[in-house]
Image (tube, rainbow, N blue to C red; front, side, top):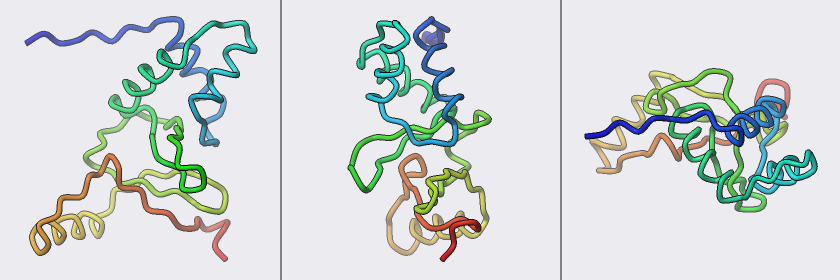
Length: 136
């Protein structure tokens, strides 16, 4: 079985740079494409999607569907992580994304499996609520 090598292409570096500069925002492929085009960089949306998919798999970027527009949004994460150990929290007030590793959530996962025969997909499970600063 061949292990695929991950290349650091110019396009990938530009995308990561944009995500890092906007780490406190949820960005879309269109926002990234507009930014790169305004900088004179010709990067197609297909290339952006492909790179984002790899960054999500590598645990560098969080992908989620924003309820207001039902589109994929992305957020840069400070450190790479293993998706299997975390759930994701999104503040509906400020939009901040947080990774959560909590035994109580893990207990819920086990409960859902054992009592309800339902496996939660941690890659797609996002809990929405309010952070301390935005709490009503």
